[in-house]
Amino acid sequence: MSTHSPGASVVDIWDRKKRQGLPPTKHSKRWLARAQLKPGVARYRTKAFAIEQDAWQWAEDTVAKYRLGLDNGSRLSISAILDDYIEHLKGKGASPKHVIQVRWVLTKLIEAGINNLRDERLPAKAEAHFRNLKTQLTNANGTLRRIHLRDASPRTKNCYLSALLALCAWATRMRMLPYDPIKGIITRFKEPKKTKPIFSLAELSAILSDKHRNQRFWLPFALSLYSGTRISEAVHLEWQDIKWEERRIHIRLKSQYRLKGQKERYAPLQDELIEILQPMAKPHGWIVDEKTRNHPKTWRWFFKRLLLAAGMQMDGRSPHSTRHQWAALSTASSLDPFHVMELAGHSSLNTTLRYSRCASLFREAVAGWEKGKFQLRTAPGSCAANLKISTIDEVVSKKELLIL
Image 1 (spheres, rainbow, N blue to C red):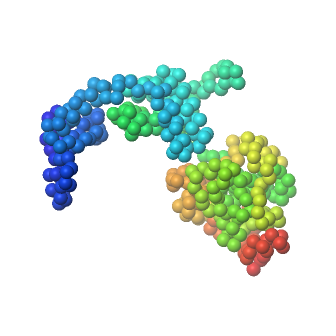
Image 2 (cartoon, rainbow, N blue to C red):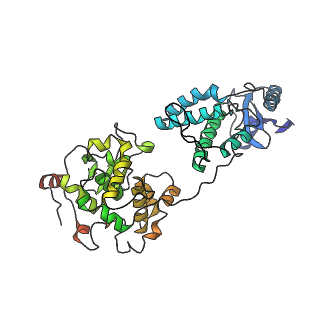
Image 3 (cartoon, one colour):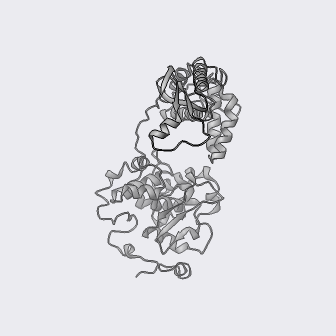
């Protein structure tokens, strides 16, 4: 391989195949022209030719065009490709909420004057915009609700940055851009590693007491706490999802709601959760009532009422805290982190480790627990640990657990 000008090169395909011990393909073009898109970056645009002179001509012309910004025009605006990018997200299976959020973020960038993706000052302008980003709460008529604005959190800034990074990466793959203008240049903002507020074992025992069964959020709370499911998954469970004999809960795709990640999995069915579900077991149908299931905006309110009934305050906790609590207790009871990741449906072990960051607070308290088995309503060594279920018919018909 020889190079005539920086960034332009031509490779003899037949010679390379010969050195690799492969026979040349009949009627194939011999010369591969390569044009480096950006100095110092190993990204090339290639094209095969039958004549070496044509290959050199194309490579040098292409490099010159990229250097001068003449390839595909000198301007590529976010507003021009926004609709195509949104259609790409929908075709990829992105959730409607994510699509709306991406459109809103990119629209805000356009309003802030960050529109031309071929602008050499794009990285500097984008970083300055994200660094000075302010939170703005508006009323229904568009007026600002808060007079004194405050800096947006690092998480919000990273959300804006992720949308721009994804857009530039897609435009580069579609050959709309010669190279990614911001990849590796703008770094993400460092988010503080805060520990999610969770419950003590005494608080959990108080909440799970039978005297609070009349609270609307008591059953979703118990389902999420014992199985590690998300609240949206817990309230959409059906009785046929409970695998009594296998002691598992099937988290499956349903038309009534969107399962995060579109990934089915199995969650554990613990003995104490069996005790809770046994008196109300049915052959089929929803486990949680319709009023709670179909109004997600009320979940936080009902969660707060449950805590108040148990004599507690929110203290930064949310319905999702039950999932963090399950991960922490499972890890504290010596359950393998990779098993916890599989049961929780996480795609990364780092997410699981972040969820179980508080496990060290419970290691001494749960030292007598069996691995992965919670004992929040019963004392260690009680008969609940020896419960076994033979068939679903016995649970439904007799309305009692069979102790073997």
